[in-house]
Image (tube, rainbow, N blue to C red):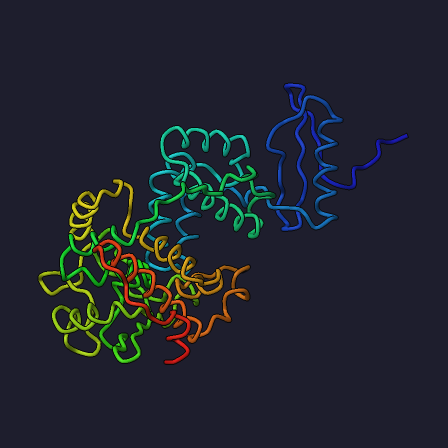
Length: 387
């Protein structure tokens, strides 16, 4: 009886005694096995696996993943349409933490063990936050490669590896916030208060214009952000999220500081910057950072207390003044997929009540520090209602 003809693929025995297998793929190209087999059965099993993948629609071109990670990752960043700061971050993470290991490796050669080893080495070399950011970026790039059918499955499968667990940040007291404002001087005094009692992000403060300030209503409108890149250039653009575009009602004790700043330091045109450096140009992070470091030391705050941490102070004081979590999220311009529906209903009237409560608390703290007994007055809620 004659030998049965194979219906899928071909197998031939080599002079070495090993077996070579190949098959015609859905793309019309002949694909050999990546290695030879010791037995005829092993070669036949490999062909059966390829045939099953084709029938299930799960077949991938074995040569598709033969693209080095570095080329693919750079193109991935180019095509994302990222903000200037996010693009800068991704390119830095690639350059310093990912490409040295995976840059020349083909996509389909990056395996889960390879990723685990890389992460373990990075954890020894740098901080946990940087490792988490790098892992999330690597996982995102490889997920797109899987969607593009260049690899069968994402090799980044370490549970919790992309999660950041930031340490609890210190909260400044009212006296310390006042001390920072005094130490930084009149040009930067308002910026400290808006960072704490706004509470506004540094990049939001850098993007404020004179026309964003309403002295009569005592409000500041946040419309955009201007983060500083490592080159020193300010990249003006949208706020961190849609929730970042907001009107912040300020506590009454800031009226005088706001008036003085507009008169003395803000650029005079309607579209002029609210905060500029001593030379009349957008302030630089490095220059302000040196002033901030000296002021922080003077008031006794730890070396890791950042200007951004003033936001935590504002959150805490607003909550103590009676604001709900919904109110503080709206006030700080925060949002997430889960929080979007929760925090969108805190209206301007409620924000005025929060601002009035802040005014009561800060004024009382200052009076106690000065040894004065505060004059009896209506609560922030009552004054807001009267207004």
